[in-house]
Length: 188
Ligand code: PRP
Image 1 (cartoon, rainbow, N blue to C red):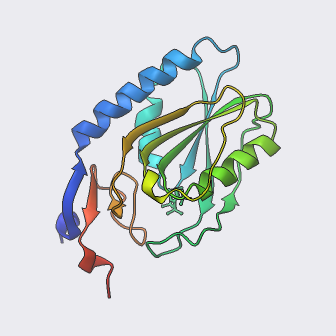
Image 2 (tube, rainbow, N blue to C red):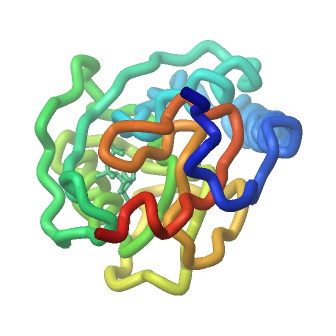
């Protein structure tokens, strides 16, 4: 049984990802170090777990870490467009600078829902740090809150990706790279 069997090609290797994550960590450190209040870094479960773990180790600042769970894809490869917060925050974000950590921004539905949620909870700013962005698939426009900034690791071509947190039917998340699944793995 080989985990990489279903992979057609690698888009970003482990080394390329870690190099970019390190750069993002430096940018976030630089941008947030002058703020009086420590940021709340919120990982969007499940997909962002690996990116979050690597990223926070590259942010040289005191911070709070929490997770939120949003579900929109079910077990298929196409978003059903209705994200649902299925596990709420533990930390109180009122008056705080929130950094939402995502694995990917695709249609924008999830982020739009999360930004509205953080606003409703009284966050003073909401930034987004996503590993991948698929601009070709954007359907929903979202606006950051306050002094929020947008950080992106890589622009992603319009493939269904797996690895480094990305799944197909909850599998492949533990691959250390981001790759493209062979179509026969999800086509009937
Ligand atoms: C994926 C991904 C983002 C979201 C992006 O989550 O992790 O949160 O979709 O898509 P959007 O921009 O079209 O809303 P998914 O629902 O697959 O759950 P997962 O994180 O558990 O894999």
